[in-house]
Length: 287
Image 1 (cartoon, one colour):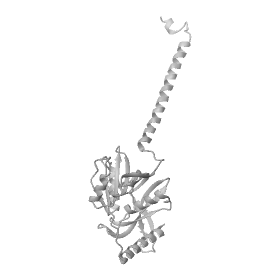
Image 2 (spheres, helix red, strand yellow; image 1 turned 135 degrees about the vertical axis):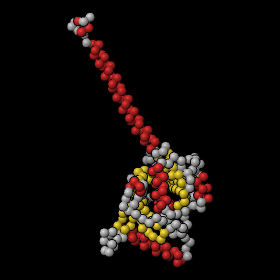
Image 3 (cartoon, one colour; image 1 turned 180 degrees about the vertical axis):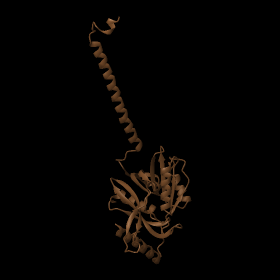
């Protein structure tokens, strides 16, 4: 896999040089990143990690409302951003991620699971802040909705060479993999030489940096943060419904246990009533 990564890096560099020589207009995509009210510390750290990986991101303050998401298109226009990353927190424990192509769409809503920040993982990998990362996908991105999401992830996570904060280095890879209809995100450092033998021959390898998280696609809309639904995940169950189901099962177990205790008590009572009173019983002897 490391040879393929190095080949992709060389291909990216050659494309940049070819575009500059042919006078092709460079891509100037910018990404607006913001969150809703109620985000937790871990969610804020995830946003901070993504901001460090993407030098073309512009942070904004939190959005006060969760019902008027069309306001995000106006904010993106004010910041001259063509893409939007919106983190929506619910009940201080559930996190949803919106990816939108502003202002005309499309937009994708995903549920974020199993997120771990760089501080939590403490991986040995490292990369230069502001460097360009290779956006790679595995071979499972087939189908109309997966192809659309692949294109949107490419626009959001691939850093254009015209970014002001960009440093001209390619030293890490952003990997998006599909497994069980979920999107697995990983960030790896590209090491071209063995640290133990720096003077030896090149031995390219990958070392994970972080963060890591899993995305479950929920819906794809034709417009930006709304509009006709292009794709809907019928297998998705909300975390609130899952927690309610767990509580319902626990409540059913409690009800069955209490009914069993009540039946046993009634059975003991009937047994005591059916037993004939003995003449030598304590009540009669010491009466």
